[in-house]
Amino acid sequence: MNGLATRYLGLDLRHPVVASASPLTATFDGMRRLEDAQAAAVVMASLYEEQIRAADAAYAMFTDYAAGSHPEAANYFPELPDYRYGISGHLETLRRAVEALQIPVIASLNGVTDEGWLDYAMELEQTGVAALELNLFLPPSDLATTGHEMERRYLDIVRHVKSEVGIPIAVKLPPFFSALGNFIIELQSAGADGVVLFNQFCRPDLDPETLSAKPRVFLSTSADIHLPLAWIMLLSHHVDLSLAAGTGVDTHVEVVKYLLAGADVATAASTLLRYGPDRLATLVEGLERWLSDSPFASVDDMRGRLDCAHSGPPDKFFRNVYLHGISDYPAPEFAPRNGEDERSIGAIG
Image 1 (spheres, one colour):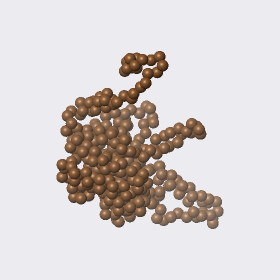
Image 2: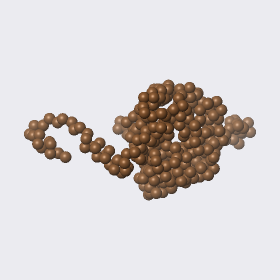
Image 3: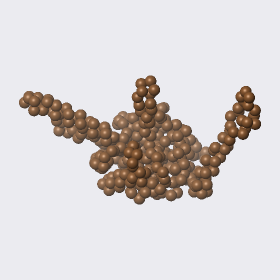
């Protein structure tokens, strides 16, 4: 399997298929199963600042409940001397995984406040994890906030965390930027060691029967590969940071495409939730078979062979893809409706 070896965030990996953050990586047993299924590395499920603060608030409420109302009731809910707030269980799981697993364990953080990003990042580092993934998603809900202000906010978070944390940092991004390529170059200047394209968040939906809003989870499929694929093709020869594909990996074919585009690793979550952890072995074995039948000697040899540096000027390349994708799509056969002739239908453009 030496030909499959790759590097990501400065880490030496046996192959380029990483188990990304998901319910499967929320527990030690889940991460152990993914290691047994041949994951090259595992990203633990994200630590969400809101959930930690909610747990802290509940703990404070119960420990303070009835305090002072009666001498015998002041310690009805006694304080736990080793309670490290809502983060304690998450940290313990990470620490256990780091000590027991033979593959790199990467922490993931999704914060809200400046203090949360920084404080929790430092606590996660202390568990001994190999790297930290900043799962960044700041909803632009304030219509007075400009795109430039949103980008500054993202960059400030990365700079602050990087200034206090010594392990490699990957930034997991949404695709909602007006000039994503330039923004990623700025992330690199801010200290990011890698980017993951892209994160998957629950999307809202409306229920006409109950007249209410509700979240929905959509597992990605191979049909979702094209946007991150395009950006990895474009970035491959223009950035020095690690590139991880984070969407649309369903079979080994998507892994191959991402590597040819220039990715260092392909991360998988939806396909593992859909088929189980053993899907990892299927992805790795499929990549190995494809590589053995290809003209390439290794993953390093194939990486970036179809990026934009090999496809001519990027603007012309993407324009041609767009143009031919629209104009070459076969039109359906239409039968003339009553009172219409074929010439009138053919004239519609």
